[in-house]
Image (tube, rainbow, N blue to C red):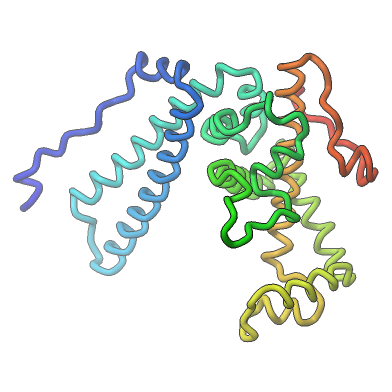
Length: 274
């Protein structure tokens, strides 16, 4: 057997000194590690799927080498997450972020490494930088108008809020659930019919798809409603992250978001745990 010819050594463990060294990493290095973490996570999930498939198809245990590889993916992922947590805890805004259910060390470190509060006087700058401004379009031949890394972090942030939305203490998860209920009610009342019509005009949507069935009747499909609610919860969190970081940097409260200060869209929601 191949396992008799290969010495399956475990990965090098993350020592306390190496973990503490994470405190001194610069934003560029943290961005690399966050990217690596998500790549490793994808690899682990693919490996887990393959392991389950082999067990199901062959009615037996996966090969020892496959199990070893999967175990090491998981171990590396945990170690890297722990190191990123060390970095996040150095910064007060990182500690605040992690005080919220659904925001772990990887997400917190990713935000710290991709947002410079000195270059973002308004939270709208962060929204646009993260690709959360629906009015900004990436036209052909133009430079991408948002930061791809920050957009990935915010995607995972939204997914995390969805996962914890059934937890009573998950402030942003609860906001997501509440917003989704509001969006569903508006959708059923036909308040998004203009958007549905516009989407059909500008996007190529197959007539055989479920999405087309909704858009053609003047409604947004469930996946679209889900995305809207998730995006809203992420924007609220980023507004709070910006406020905390701004107050820590300058000692004063930042300007209110345009949609609240000028349009009077909705009462401002204060950051939790702050």
